Image 1 (cartoon, rainbow over the protein chains, first blue to last red):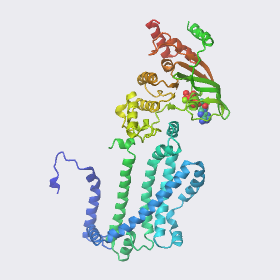
Image 2 (image 1 turned 180 degrees about the vertical axis):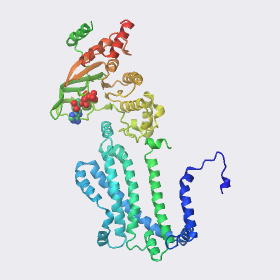
Image 3 (image 1 turned 30 degrees about the vertical axis):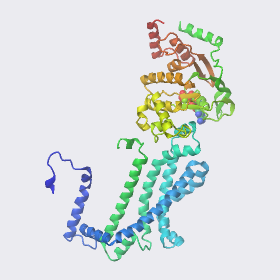
Image 4 (image 1 turned 120 degrees about the horizontal axis):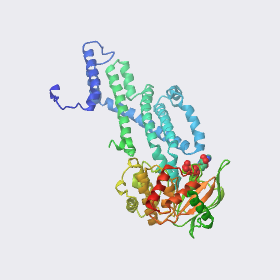
Length: 264
Length: 276
Ligand SMILES: Nc1ncnc2c1ncn2[C@@H]1O[C@H](COP(=O)(O)OP(=O)(O)OP(=O)(O)O)[C@@H](O)[C@H]1O
Ligand SMILES: [Mg+2]
């Protein structure tokens, strides 16, 4: 393999450098499994995980459960975005709104929302509702907090300039305040996504009949560490993918920022 | 000798109703007073600015120059006195205040409806024209954060002028620029003013800038306009020009700056060398 590496003038691509350690660890893990140092019921070998992954994909089991999980996150996150943004706009754009909204939000956010699971089960039963509610609740706070502070941090001088050049309130919000708060909103969105996956994991421990968490629970009962590892990897790939999507979104939406101007 | 000159100016002042504005004032302040709690910043100010007149407002830091300008921009509430303003006003602030998320040409058009300008294409053409007037048409598509300080101020100037204001307000617009760029900007402002003829109120702390550009110079101190003086020097004014240095001395004196200032002595020396 290394024969293809030209001795001179060859620069290892950055991505390869970054993955070198990971690959080394995987090889070590595989070797340890093969040598019997790590029994399969403790942790399946990478090759076994890959095989299981392929089987789950071929049978359609993975896709269907993934879709269920994705659906939960998307629904919950959409609710979080709508609620968080609405509350942030109310609190950010008026003093009265701030009085009404900000204080309770600041109090609620200090509560570890995952602790609400028992209450949610009592309120919403054990169907889809408590799962989506948990994801929605978890995502609402980062969206709210970041957008609210983003709106408040918009340069007063720019607002004044907008005023001066004849923008009415609606136009001010559209041309000055929202674009000014967009970077903070996107930061909030990234946090919200991270929290959504976390909420998903917790929510799917609650009597799920489909979804990645359900697969994990099932696999635990049959001591299938290979399936558990596949699902864990799926979780992290989902996290990475959504993070990548938001970052791409940032690159387009915030193209005016000096940090992006130099990149593109 | 210097004192004599100054005295001569002082003696001339009441005789010369230098504050007499052009016949049709676009701005009228009558007994305008502005207080912040019990700090009276502007105390019963009377001010008229004629159509197309270029007025410079000098004053020490904290004397209330920005407060007057904000009132003329309609950014402040008027509670005492009478204020008449034209509706077509535009401001260039001390900082460019361009929206960083709008490209330069979109910033120029801020607050203007493309529909009212005859469509998106006509609007773009208008922005382009305004930018070429300030020598910035090649940067029309740039993001504001990539402009230099001078370019950003020129974009702000284009944004102000594109709406053909009756009253153009400049709040120390060149204070943050280097001396060389500032001189270029003076020439630009002078030519744009000649072309569009808005009434201008320019706040500045630079006496030379005021003399170079203004028809009339006002000095604000302790809430009152203590000096209102026409500048009758022929245009394309330069510090070496006859009368320039004397005016500068006079204004500096009124501002309470003693003549020992380095640059001023240098300028006086230059004046002597130039034989005026
Ligand atoms: N919003 C405000 N609240 C209270 N005091 C204010 C306010 N705005 C201005 N002042 C006071 O009014 C006075 C005049 O301020 P202003 O900004 O007009 O000064 P200026 O002449 O523009 O000074 P500079 O040359 O430093 O810009 C200052 O003493 C300032 O502290
Ligand atoms: Mg000021």
